[in-house]
Length: 247
Image (tube, rainbow, N blue to C red):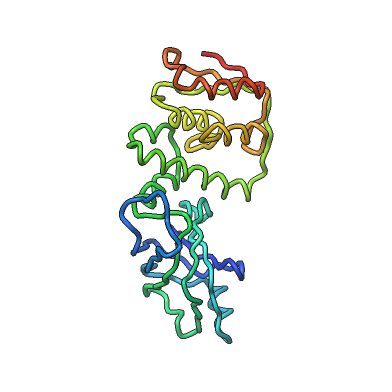
């Protein structure tokens, strides 16, 4: 069975278990969190991993810091959120009963909410481009963080190739601002939900390699010629890095 979430113990590099639902998060995303903002999270209908059960079979196992992993439909990690426990949690074999809710209190350095998890559901199996075109501005900000998180997780397990001298076709029909241009650019290069920068600094980083393509290359922007002033600074950075622009 493939689950939506896993808990990963940072200290022991071990998957603790899996579940499909998390309770205790705020409904909407907040831009910043503080050290004192603790969450009492419930991992609903939790199932412990065989490895974790084996370790706990003959000793107590302490846990201090976790990652909440986001999984795709095949069970592969596509995102993670650091979760710092407010007190150390000790598991014993008697605690490891599958199907119960596991309750853990801690701090989330990067904001996580039910709204974010719902958008992650859209990103588990990305097959089409431009799904962001119907998002609100707030949802687009969340989506940018999701695709950046996904890119960081997926590139760890992939063999990054630096393709050059190719032409990429950017669909400009849904571009209305800078963030939507970054979405369209990322998808033209790396497919649905693809990431290739979200601001001028991160775009410059991507153009140095490690994000699927490296200059020189060409981007051809369709359906956007009359709105180029919106992305003038972005086009300047692309030109400075030996990217040819066709409008």
